[in-house]
Image (cartoon, rainbow, N blue to C red; front, top):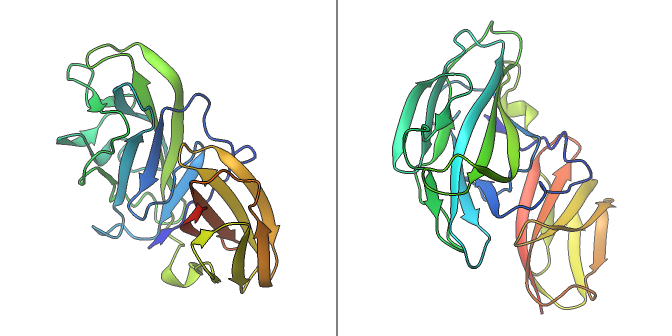
Length: 246
């Protein structure tokens, strides 16, 4: 069972500097720099992390690879499986890249998103007691075969937590009265949550704590466009919604 993004090191919720791409998981949640994504299962597909990469640049193609940075407590330091682009790679060595450096990077056209099939998966049990961490970095390059890195990489951790079970995951309990708003966003909040509002380029617009009850958030000062809302409860679970400000 996957525990939603823990967001342990968002540094105030800011995305990585000079971002030209956004990474989301299979549920549409944005993966931020420093996030930890936990699984309490080693079975496929329960432990599979699907992901999509969107090129936020309106004019230029971007070129991307994922680098396997480090591991802690794994029985085998090689990572089981990583699919990115049109190929899947197995038994990936530490510090290696997907796609490998002798192959073309994944190219993403302006304002396009990668297709289905990209995922991480490991069945490494570690010692059965401690967490097993695998750290990866999404990196951007100057060209298909050019290893000159541009921008700032996005680091995140894929973690197997043997103590995590389905009972540990308590989803965010709230509802939106409407996803099309003008001056006020109205919510029925059934537990305290942290709210973060992002634009479609991944920029943090606002962050606040919402207590239990019927709540209103003033959005009159926001530009007319779509925004992404991320709600986080005290159990670390996330709920993502989209709104349109008119």
